[in-house]
Amino acid sequence: MEKLRKIIEQYGQWSELTTYTERIETHIPTDFSRILENAKALLESISKEICASKGVEIRPNSSINKLLKDAFTAIGYTSSDYVTQISSALATIGQQMGNLRNEIGITAHGKILDDLKARNNKVDELTKEFLIDTTEIVASFLIKNFENENPRLKSTEKRIAYDDCEDFNEFWDELFGEFAMGEYLYTASEILFNVDYQAYLAEHKSFMGANNEYLNKSGSDFRF
Image (cartoon, rainbow, N blue to C red; front, side):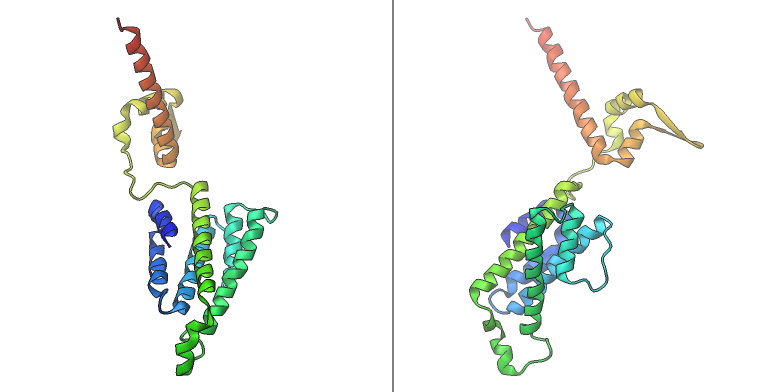
């Protein structure tokens, strides 16, 4: 699941999912029922996280089929979107994965010894590969689309300090001044920094770019 691992590394807040990917890869040669169990849990975790982040209510005991559909809806796909139509088909595959897990799982209803030995042979290699690839594609698609719509600061990215941007803060405060809230008084730059850090970064970057451009032009005016 190399593609999914790279996406998880790119968006560090999903790092806990490596528990599932490592289990899936570990059990490929020996126990496909474990793969199904962790693949299902992987898709459920991603779907629930997206729904929770978007404020979408999750019904107790929702099936994997329902969770995947809710996740696609939470991201913003309507029932008429071709992606949602495809997701419905993929969600059905997810549901069948759960059913298959119950059929071949080592703990499902107890099994005689011969059945335990033969359970993994009930699924041919091509089907196994298809289900693993499908899980990786759906998981990758959900995470990337969610993150593209909801960019968050990477865990490895260093947060700049407010006091280190004095020039920009003064510039911003001259434009928008101060805001009084009862007995409290805050500058515009303080509010922007603490309320919307990503917007603060964008404005600071724009300010620095404009300053550098001005200095370059000014410098060229005095060249002989």
